[in-house]
Amino acid sequence: MSATSDLSTGTAFGLSREHEEFRASVRAFARSEIAPHIAQWDRDHHLPLEVVRAMGEMGLFGLTAPEEYGGAGGDFTSLCVAIEEIGRVDQALGITLEAAVGLGINPILTFGDDEQQARWLPDLVAGRALAGFGLTEPGAGSDAGATRTRAVLDDGEWVVDGSKQFITNSGTDITSVVTVTARTGTRADGRAEISSIILPVGTPGLTVEPAYDKLGWHCSDTHPLSFDGVRVPEDHLLGQQGRGLAQFLATLDDGRVAIAALAVGCIEACLQMAVEYAGQRQTMGGPIGRKQGVAFQVADLAVMADAARGLTYKAAAMKDALDSGAVPSDRARVAAFKQAASVAKLYASESAVTATRIATQVFGGYGFMEEYPVARFYRDAKILEIGEGTSEVQRLLIARGLGLPVE
Image (cartoon, rainbow, N blue to C red; front, side, top):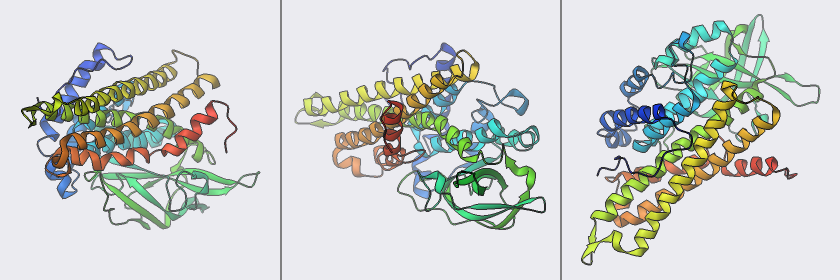
């Protein structure tokens, strides 16, 4: 049994036969096209663009996009399935897919006008191009309202100055645009007016700084960006002026569920590797899986996998019900989805970190060796508790959802 073999742990919440058939196709792709090479790509800190293009040919970037732009017009649950299965083999390529769709395509798809969608979406949906999402800054991470990047309208053009950091898919050879938040004025209540602006890569003044030397996600492309008098036409404003922060917060709600799906893939990989190793590793006359100390740890991994999967696909089903009109998009149901997204993200991401620690412990000294995939998953997991809303932010949002007057 390989580390990416199917381990029967139950069917995810609300998944149809079509979803499971799709899962099987993505799993087969990940095994054949990613698994044999991922250790070397990780060592080389290399994002294989040929795999990105192959994922595009499979339709993974267009799962939720309409057919007129080359997409499948499918549901959000299918995207979560794809992210989970890619993430079972490698978390960095899983986040490449998640960020490309959730942070790159979705803002343009959701808030862009017809011209913007027609211009940018076909290549993004096909996997011929990637897009980034520029929200975080050195002094504005979880506090997105503290954005310092500014955009001033001058003679029919937006002039953008500032910087962003930790931007995924922002510096590849096929990156086409980065959508960024910027201050475009001051609101009546004195707070900053935040708008979203599409910046094509290659525009003078837009500098992609050297890539980060990250602890994990070595195959993922991540850069800081700087803007020095970047000028783009006025029609590159995404959606309504002053609605940028609301747009990006809505994008993050969906992204939290997608990150939870990535975390589920991590937990499942740890479970599979631990079961395989505990059944094979011989000590004191038998496999270590005979020892209760090991068996109980592996059992805990199975519980975490089932619980994280259930929470994640419950939230995904709620998202699909809202999008399809199966339930009214009233305030209460939207709030319920937001709560479910935060719960799924919090539990799945923290469980993934715990799962990698447990799996590494099961492997003992070998778990500390880079030749074993468990070491890569251990490095990759921690960021799941940070990206797209830290664990602390999720707890704050959940507490507010319960009616507590937390600040």
